[in-house]
Image 1: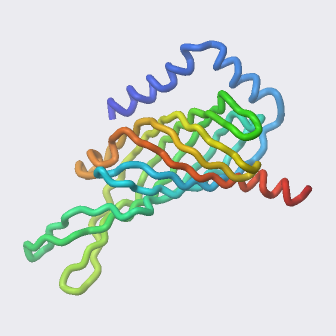
Image 2: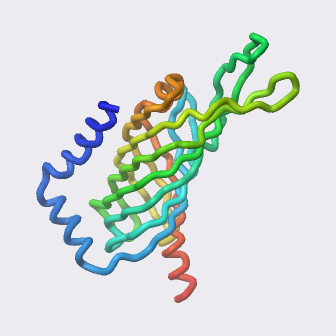
Image 3: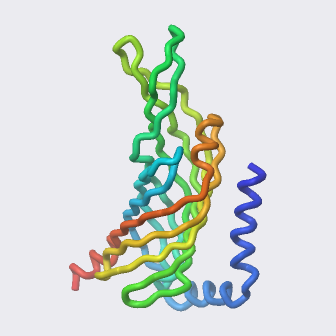
Length: 208
């Protein structure tokens, strides 16, 4: 937990160390009224040295399309495995089932018609986190191990059309779970491959 708090402070210190960035965020937030946005986000990262996909939805407020505050929810959609010790002393393979929810902040410090460079920061809590495994021809579930994850990265997005974007970024993920195996697996440098559908812009486009 100390590492998580330290990393959050460092991330925000990077922004606050530049008064012009803070002034820019304040300007975009005061320039116009916030608008609701809904965004589908499908990104990939590395877990246990394998590519792991995370699918998430964001719902929140967008200020001048440059500053976003949102609630986020999603799940790990790739197969993440762990050896499970069964009641009869055998070892079987368990498949992770993880859902999460949290808060999201994003500041786009460069933006034009087709390109966007942003700093996304997410803090999520996982209360539904367990393994499914088979024992004696029956499906069993392990106990839920709640956890917390913090992610910060720099992302470059290319938008060929206004409501679709794809790109990537690099950053770091810090995690803490009751399961040490998950803590080590999900705490790592991350490389995100993102495909975004800007539902709000799509709806506005259809209305026009």
